[in-house]
Length: 247
Image (cartoon, rainbow, N blue to C red):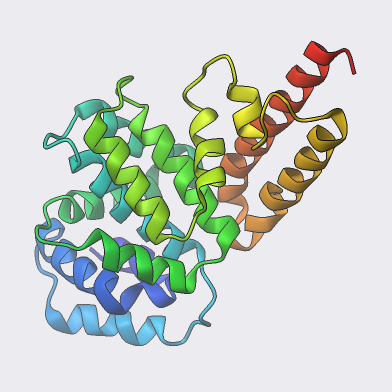
């Protein structure tokens, strides 16, 4: 248990307060035998020593909780989605840390009567916009893990996006990175096919600035890979349109 408590207490800032803190308290009790109220209070005191800025641990906990909403949105828990969560965390954090995260996730996913609005608003209040965009990118990848996105899952993604104050253009752009159609490249760049070449270039420059991996560097090196993947999709969309137009 000592290694788990060390992992959980390290790098967590604001996420031990509010509704997220309540979920963590419940999840810890369900996932790990032997945790007490005193243990959880100790984590809270440790978290108070951190600044209000988002730490790697805060982002990690936010991923786990929002993932649970998406996975349960269609009324069932698909093993492929659980496998995706585990594989994603192994890729980002390594096997040991991922194992700790997944143990906690098993407790989180058992929670009932939790408000996605309250959770999302807490994240919105504390987390920078670029980090919230990265959260949505991950959630779309999760929804795609079982190859079919249900209307309930899409509705949940819309809700989370709205509560996180992510505008419809950004939502459509991130969605187009995973759900391809004839106009996906234009949707990723948040423009219409009728846009001029100058408008295309301006849109690309705007998105490069908004989604540059350096925007989430404060979360730690482990989160740069996901940001770089998203950044690459923007570049690929731009190059595709330039090739089509002969620019």
